[in-house]
Each structure stands twice: as structure tokens, then as C-alpha cells.
Length: 233
Image: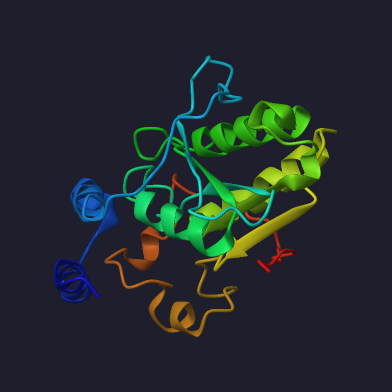
């Protein structure tokens, strides 16, 4: 592991981070770490807009593997609790993902809370997915079945929520999705949460959020379940 990355992880494990107050510092650290390796990417030839109705353009980066072995496009939504993470901090991960899977990866830079509270992130991801699924030729694909929605943590929540929303609104849903440790259960009530930690402390994470303040304006709709239906070969 890179020594600087090891040091950063050690500091984060020791420090008490309150995301309500420290999210800007966490974002800055993520961007600094993301500048370490050189990764190949390009701006896509297609335009991506949010479905928020305000004409917001959603930045996207496309990562091409050193050896392309598959025709699928992974439309990726990053994690970070809807507050941290962005197209910069996830650039190394997306470049590695492209090389390991042999697929192109399109990373979506959706808007973050608290500056842009719900449903801004969902609308950005929904707009990006809907337009590509309706016209996959924009991304050089022959059909929409080659588009796989993918996300980790909060991004996994967004991928699942986008899939459900597309179906509910009568649009073409994705045929496959990959959800990496997705946030698909969001119950911090000590009386009803299945988390033993929440039942004991009133929290499901190590943040300094007291029991009386466990709700958040940064959360997205939470689909009940989701499974990865695709694997590299």
C-alpha cells in the first residue's frame, strides 16, 4: 500500500470525524489522495443532464481499459454518504475497475449534500441513466442491455433507486446492476433497527451523532434489496 495512503487511513481511524462539520476536510483529503497515480480518462462525446428540471449538466468521465475484453459500459455512481466522494477522488478506483473488468467505466459526478440536498443526487444519476438507456448509441453501444448500473455504498443506493424509479416512471430499466455494499436499509431507530449497535447506542456508525439527531437531510430513498446480476469473465 502507498505510504501516504496508509498514513491517511491511520489518521482517519484515530480521528473522531463528524461529517456534519468535517465533510469539507474529508473531501479535500480524498482529492489529494486521488492525485497520486496517473489514470487515463476522457470526457464523453455525449451530454449528460440532470432530471432536476434546471438544465444542470452532470460531469461524466469515461475510463477505457488497457485491454478491452467486454462491450458493456459500467455506469458508475460513487460512494461517500451523499456528502463526500467525487469524480476526482474516485478516478484511481475507476481506472483500476476498467482494467480489471475489461469494460469501459463511465463515472458520474452527481451533486453532493449539504450544498445540494436530496433529491439532487438522485435526479443527476437518474438523468444520466435514463438518457443512455433510451439511446445507447450515444455511448457507442448497440443496445441498452450493454449498460450496467454500478455503485458502492451510497452509490449502490443510487443505482438501486434509479433502477426502481425508471421502472416506476415507465422508462426502460437496466437489465443488470452491480451493488457494492449498498445502503439499502436506513433505519436508525433503536426500537426498530436490525443493527445491534443501533439498539445499544442509538447509532449505526462511529460518528458523534447523538441518538436524538439520527435523521439526516442527506439520505436518498432506500430500496429494500438489490443484488449484483453481472460478473466479469
